[in-house]
Length: 375
Figure 1 (spheres, rainbow, N blue to C red):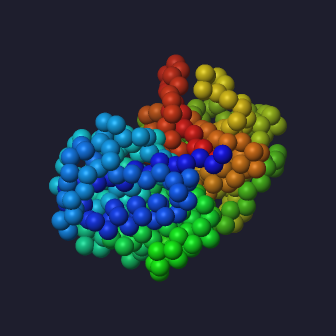
Figure 2 (tube, rainbow, N blue to C red):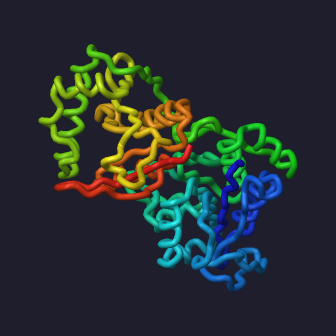
């Protein structure tokens, strides 16, 4: 039986009516009598509140009793400029986003994501009248994108002002159920869907941002070993020098180690114009780290490294997208990986790619956060 996804639409005093009502209706209408999406409003409390245009609404749930959302919609409005200082609200957004499959901000809902510390390393956008304010609030690692209707970071999708939230909601429907499904929904409500591609947006067929570069990904072979050795040593050295972490030991990477690695595991190399851009393995057994959470219905991504010389071109996201497709072809239901717990930027990147934090592994001298994505 197909899973029904919970769609929680956040509301608060002076939220913009169309910011929350537009996406609400799109998910509700595309749902097929609640078979696909169960849509509801949630507020800090269940007390009645008023939208920016004066409409009185009563949230169906409060933060205390809200069913766990699969999709979280964070709308904007003039009230967002007040609520971004409401720590209870921004803490709830941050905690809820950790477990949600997708998070969609509409208009100045982006300000609430910024205050919830969820924008690290993302392509971001908002209402054109709030771009300067978002720049002030966003981390330096975020990339501002202007003159677009929406941007897709994998887990986090952000739209421009007001009606752009409807375009982004239709885009999410297309990502989850296909383009034809979204087009039918737009036709039902007689809405002219502004479908587009933009920086950070891969199109409905992908679940993480596609790189603009063309990678050639193949199974690793002995002739790849020298390039792999340089890549892994460079990665280990940079992690230690830039982050102060012994995530990988540079000395551990030897030709013998890598030879056994490609012999015993499914290891893949990605080349860009003849140069090694990235390397990773997909494995099917990770019981020591996952412990009681381990099961065989998953593919485990390990030793993912990207060349520092091409950082920022979306290579890591493309490698994860390839891995996801490869694991799905093996008829597995989850993609899993672990990441050094004390590396916040990398952890934020995995969250932005749609992976959910679901555990932690502690060893002598290091700890890892455990991530998974349901396929």
